[in-house]
Image (cartoon, rainbow, N blue to C red; front, side, top):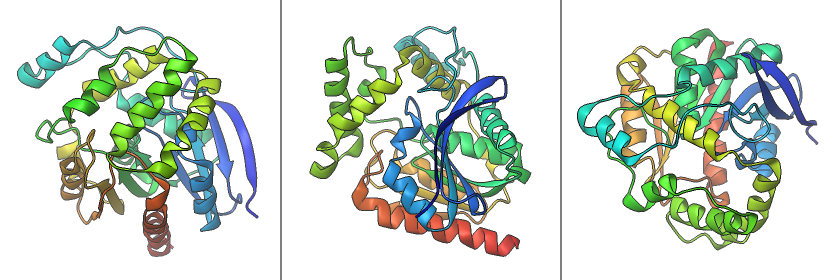
Length: 304
């Protein structure tokens, strides 16, 4: 059985970061970075355990402004007008912090845990943060896996209308409303029929709610993404072994986002998962975990 350390909080890059570790101390360190408005528990416990069973020391954590990590202040709700200005006139969105600050949080967590370098696996905004760590602190990254993410290039098609509406919806006002909204949101993001996931959604929503919501923080995270611009040109210089995983029916970060990431990074491998949307349903775990395992252990063997 793999060792499991319950959630703890550590000071890193000037904020408190809540993290949790699965797997033995001497295994290959693998950091899981979650996406916009998503707590670390969106990396499912069993998903983390299965990766740990493949010989990784798996570390998941709450990004700033989410879950049990520090909640910051400032910034207003994003308006449709700001999005239009960004899209058509390239007028940047104001932001309290940017993706580089979240990348520094990740590196700060590694410092606090005494990890010189690690394999990074990021989903959605987490993929953007992982890309930024790889760009700004390449010596800290053993391998990069970017899942359902993008380069920030404005040429990648925007989210579907339905997915964008989910992103811009006003926050729920009660626990009951949150649980209903949670189910609706993931139904849209999964972009398919997943009864086994839908059965678990109420319980997952309860757990997320119990750890604490921070709608204003989600707004600041969204601003950070939009204010950080495109990484596409910089990604051409990446020498880190890279795997890009994307669903063929992703309604939020369109499949072109994954393809653009893979095309921008020299030697990157691209795995398109048929029928996967903007989520990590259990039925795709064998393929996803198998790919991460092969990629990260392969990079480790090459570096040895």
